[in-house]
Image (cartoon, rainbow, N blue to C red):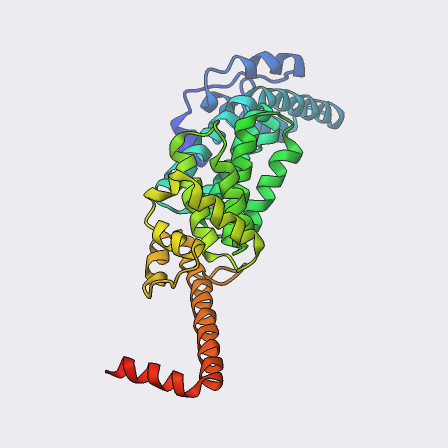
Length: 318
């Protein structure tokens, strides 16, 4: 408090200031009966002035200061709970505001700064950690996202089917972000079969499974995924179903494959991340590899049947 503020509060006379001698026993009711923070501050400043005035001996002064600090500590502890509650409310508001602005990292950081393990039930803390992980996924920080998914299991011991389903969902999104598309497609499809999730979320999960299956490298797992997804009636409503069908039937893929798939990619996969290349770059590599394979086949045909190959080329020129 500066000199002007003290002058403005000159009419507030502290019992400490007006006393020639005062004990710790007398000090406690004075502070506890203060009407507001301003009055407490006035008493504290008066106490400092009282000590500096050297009215008491060294031993008495030491005892007085120790007693005063104990009283202040007790009062601080009684105010700690409502203070922490207000701080948490502010951080929750800031996180919600940041998420509405799509400032995902800020939103995650605000939520992560709340000590969930100290203030909540296990189920509330687990959901909070999964929410933090989801924000980090949107920010394309898959390492932090994975950390919070694991922490939700290690710190909060609760058996809840909804939480387990959401963990699988987040793990699938992390795998997708890291371009492990085979594993991501498998996880997405498993989650899409979970009846505990709302229909909208299950639909989004199988839609993501289709996208990841299309982006997956060619292997047996991909073949099984393509078969399962093609036979699932829910996939027929998606824009990528014609491509899924051609891949399953091993037909020639359309030239606009990249453009169609790009429309389905999450925003964070259109840009390179610190974990991997962008999803679009990954797709383009798939297409280049397919073209190189076709060119290699053409070269083999041309070498084995040169006359027939020349006739084919001439027919295309006509």
